[in-house]
Length: 483
Image (spheres, rainbow, N blue to C red):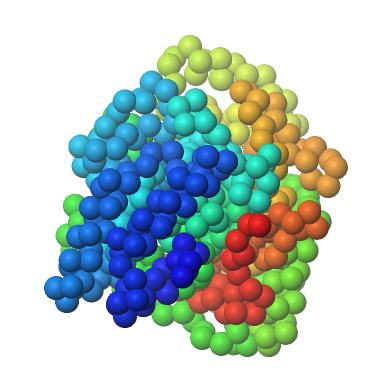
């Protein structure tokens, strides 16, 4: 039997029934990587010897009567997570030899749950791109079209899942880095509520792995089905045992509804700051039609929706305001000079990002206060709706663009060019207020490329968009392997 495209849930059942061993699953996954990954370049740091040893240990544990959520299931891990004995570089050449001494907390949780780690997946330089390429490991290609990107920064993980290189993967997300690769590669991902999953050890190379609460950034699961996302989230979720975990125990509320017809959903397919491409709009409408057909209450407009223009601008400001904190004095002074030269009439996102790079602490606090007003607005909206369906980016996967100056790159939306980073506003819709968002496949474009949408849910009610994702998977279908 071909096991590589089976779900984690199916693999767990087969392992429990004795139909297959973890050693067999692991050998089959490694053989597939060795055969197919030359063209994709998703697995940048293989760890096959230790994977085989872990698989044998999993089989021995099962023979002793042990059973854990992921016991014996082959998985991959984004390169940016610390794994003892493997390099963590974040694609930065100066750190190509950095080797952390201990596992990230999420890697520890994977191993404690019994997972077999096959290796690490590729990322962009410093995790700061919507593509996945760097000087150390090269370029990861989209499995559906090798001339296109699988997305970033968890692009290697999404490509690995689409190719059958392991049943699950873990990634991270601050600017759509889980959701965009899932959308581009036709798989599933979940951006948890901010703070739901501990992030210690998902840290730049050579930086200490401290239990720090990050602004905007989360770690989260990737899979080929919605149910597998929930399985992996249950392993990942929970506070860091060094901080809140000393006193807090996590108990996520159940999904608000179990049946599609009970959901109240707001559909968004237009953003005031950037157009939505026809292929993505069709995907949103495909999901909307499935919801209506399933009896859900669907609306296209609501006065409760926070202002999208301010949300996009505020997200851009918060995203970049911390990015220059460690800049040397001279480059920082040049940014201040450039920002001071902007016209007061320039309200573009590029201008907002430049101004935010030289925010004072007072400026940042004002932006953060506006974020809190948006969070309150979302709470009011989710009293009337259970989820919001909207794009992840305006287009399917775009062609590789390795222009070293990303500010010179452009994104083509139905034949019209727009600033490259403006496409992040849809991802920022959930990121800025810290809401959970589940990326699901929503069919394919006319050229065969996958198209996904995101289901945004109420804060700390992650099971609600995950359950809706599961119901929609049953209704419209889910992952399909690339031909």
